Each structure stands twice: as structure tokens, then as C-alpha cells.
Length: 113
Length: 115
Image (cartoon, rainbow over all chains, first blue to last red; front, side):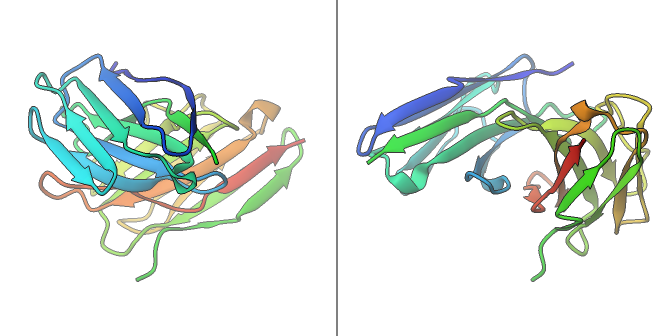
């Protein structure tokens, strides 16, 4: 079945440093979504990418979808302590279960002030 | 408006007992998902309901797990003869699967502890 891998599993940064997490799928995706889960909270939707090579920005966050639609990345510029949490990518491979997402294992981000 | 709600928020049960977890999705959302999240781990897909289609049960870990959904509303996840390895947070999410955009809205989860 479809697999979505995320790296790194953990990332510790000093406040002000940049952060990137990478997501790779074993199959071509119709779209990819990113979620953030704060410690003790539940995942919250950040963004969805649909088009090959798409790049979207939300303030200090930049999301990219690969040309082959099998990989994606999330880059945070100048991290802040409010960025702490786990970042998940989730891909939809299409097929019979339309709308079903496969989540990556997540990258746990720690920001040291 | 109201988000996804789940009950109970916490459940402690003895090994071997059955438990029922409830999820109230956002009104009008056609899709409903159940996930399991063990401490410090990712989201493990359990089951997916979409409209009137047969549910995708491919993630249920054993026949002790089952779920039902009444139309496009409430869903219950039942775990029979609970085991200690069932201890986890069970998250429910709903989405309006229409067109190309269908973000998932998660509930706060039910923390299940099997003693």
C-alpha cells in the first residue's frame, strides 16, 4: 500500500534558525496536505498543495510540492518558540478511497529560546 | 461554528473490558475518519467513512475493533476485550470531501488507558 515517509523524525533548533521537514511518498499523489500538532493538542490543517511544482507561502512558512508529485517540503524561516510542535504531511493517492489521506510519521520540532 | 467533538475525553478501563468511543463530526461533513496515536508517535489510520459508500476498514488492527456511522452524523468506535497495547489517543476527524479541497478537522481526541 501507499507509504508516506517524513524526515527528520526530530529537529532541535535555536530560535531564529531555519527548519525544514521533508515528505516522500511511494506513489504519485493527487494532493498533499500539511498539519501542525501542538504539544497536547490535535492536528490542525495548515495547507493543501495540488499542482506539480506548486509553492505556497504562509508568512514564515514555505510549502513545496515536487514536480513528480511524490515529495513535498515545509520550510520555516527564522523559527520562533510558537513554532514548536509536530508537523505532519498527509498524501492522497487517489483511487477508490477518494479523500483518504495517508499521514507521515511527523517531524517533532523543538525551538530553544 | 461547532467543531468536531469526541467523548469521553478520557477513559480508563480494565484489560478485557469493552469500550465505546463517540465522535460528533461537523454538520454537513460527508467524510469521517478514525485514527490512533500512541504517545510520541504519528497518526495510525483506522477507518474511513465517506457518504453512503462502504467504509474503508483497511486500518483496523484486529477484529476486536469496529466502527459504525449513522448516516452522515455520529460515529462510534468500539474496542472489544481491550488490551494494554490499545492504550492511546483515538482521534476522529471529519471533512467535506467535495472537489479537490478537503481539509480534515480533528476533534480533541479520547485518551484511552487500559490497566
